[in-house]
Amino acid sequence: MEFIDIPTEQITAVTDAILAVMAIAVAVYLHRIGQKNRLKTTLWVCACGLLALSAILGTIVHGFKMSKAFQTFLWHPLYLSLGLLVALFIVAVVYDIWGEAIARQVLPIMVVIGVGFFGITLVWPNGFLVFIIYEAVVMLFALGGYIWVAYRGHLEGAWLMAVGIFVTIIAAGVQASKAFSFTFIWSFDHNAFYHLIQMVAIVLLGAGLRKALLSHV
Image 1 (spheres, rainbow, N blue to C red):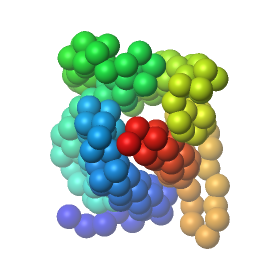
Image 2 (cartoon, rainbow, N blue to C red):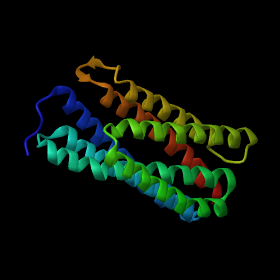
Image 3 (cartoon, rainbow, N blue to C red):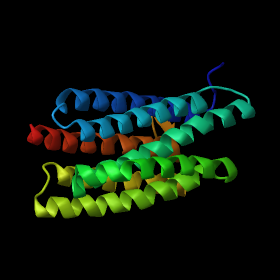
Image 4 (cartoon, rainbow, N blue to C red):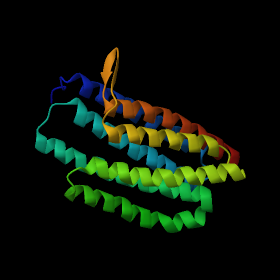
């Protein structure tokens, strides 16, 4: 395959690749420090892994010339990984709000919902819009949950988690609007801008999870 020659798509691919590296780095770090809290660590490590996988697939989709049929084929595993990512994210949030027992009960339900989201993208003409709506609902729930937990002082790092989720919501809004673009050395369209904002969110979420996991030791 040849590299794509559209400047905005090139930058989108590069920012996707950086996002993947950051997600992998956070996953490795959380796995190293979270051995005393296996389920929570596993949920977040898997979520980061799915984010990395979707970003790698995004890098390929945006960064290379390919047939329309092959591009459509690549979107299928990308949507599946995004659907499961959000599903595991909400289970991790439930863990922090209501505890491990409830999280274990919710886990299989959310996996089914995540796969169900993927099924919807197979028949819906604008699959990414469906993902943005799906993500927004989950993130609003998560934001409220972490604000409540932080206010009650039940979890170290909860305020960082809440801010990280708020930044993720902003990123989703930028992505959905398709109206944001800017040029600073390179040209960034709404996709690349979304990735930049999401990088900030990953740092905040990683910092919050670090405090939470280390406080559990």
